[in-house]
Amino acid sequence: MPTHRITDLLEADLATLPPGPILVAFSGGLDSAALLHALSRLDSARARGLRAVHVDHGIHDDSAQWAQRCREFADDCNVQIDVCAIEVLRTRGLGLEASARRARYGEIERLMTSGEILALAHHRDDQAETVLLKLLRGAGPEGIGAMRPLRRLGPGLAWRPLLGLPRAALREYAEQHRIRWITDPSNADPSIDRNFLRMQVMPRIMSRWPEAEASIAQSATWARAAAEFIEVEADRALARLQGLDPATLHFRDWLDMPQALRDPILRRWLRTLDLPEPTHYQAAELVRQLAEAGEDRQPCVRWPGAEVRRYRELLHALPPLQVPPFDWVSAFDGGVLALPMNLGTLRLVDAERRCAIVTDDLHVRFRRGGESLRLDAGGHTRELRDLFQEAGIPPWQRGRLPLVFERDGGLLAVADLWVSEAGFALFGARGARLEWSLGKPTAAAA
Image (cartoon, rainbow, N blue to C red; front, side, top):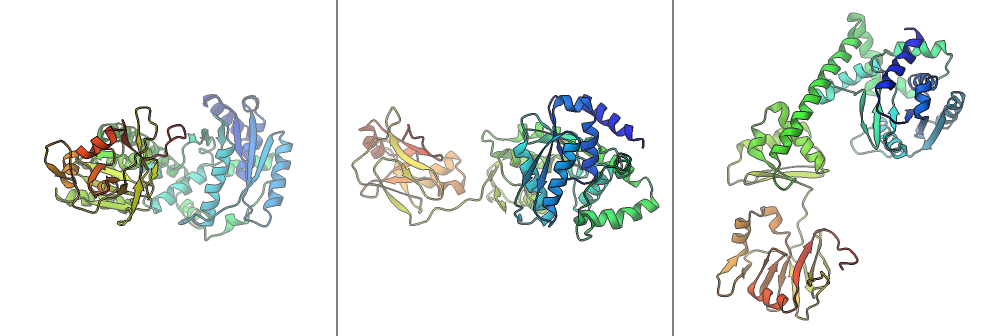
């Protein structure tokens, strides 16, 4: 490929991008060196604001030398560069390379300005390898769609303008412009899955099917289009299926969705709640339990960081619940009382939301079973169990509601949901009401 074709491609792609400066992710290797060099020759890239960033992971013995060579290369291109040294912490379930990649992107996102466009040098060979890796891991259309040419990243965008070009075209460009690039020895380590594919698998595939890389990349394009269609439809369906509480979902309607939409809806729902997503096995187990559980059952599927429970007609997604200590009890005078297990605070407030102090010997604990209270003068005593069922409070939340008792053990209030006849008399005499907050009160309110 003539070298001017790369600059022509970049020039044309720049014209279609949203406004914003360009930040090149520069490792010093062949691919990113060719990209930075080519962009530095374009007036349209410089006019936007062009700079580079190199992240030094400190993993390899020569990383400090590589960082210096990156500075020198950027200087030769007359491009400002930020060199950042980071410490890579091994993440549970990830290898060293994946942990380094996560740390690198985290640092780059921290450096990006609002609207900045991160230029990445991934090419067609990378795309083909990514598709094969995703297939081997059982990915669906979203995964097989592999890398997008343009996507959201942190405060800006990630831009991959070279996905249509083979690695050979970048090597030809680098050689013609006498670019000296860094060779990372870890790229020759066959124990890394991507390296094994590149060195052992792809050459054999290409010897039989010479157009394989282009064909695989085209399949990724089709899969990406399908994934984007599914994404739009999943968004629309989620808006219909969510309950009044965003953390709930109408489970029957969700089960009735086509299989192609059911899983994406679940994952988008959990992402909106900042909850981790399940494995494919865990998602399938949730479907199985919901389909088989009787009306009187309350199926629950858990995975690290989240659990999904069914109660009546709704699914509830929530962080893992911790049960308050059975024997926990605390004196209560109306001032701010911090509850255990991150269950918020309880206090009495007057009409201006100032704390109202009582002198009675009150105490707070959680449910132990058999509690009841009289809501109205002359009315019947009601068991909490019945009140909870009538109000539709899910069973797992009932033991997390603080209960306020008077000196002789009579139940005065259930959080700020129900207050007994005696509770109204006691609190009303001070013009106060109970307030239960799952967040910390502000200094002014306290």
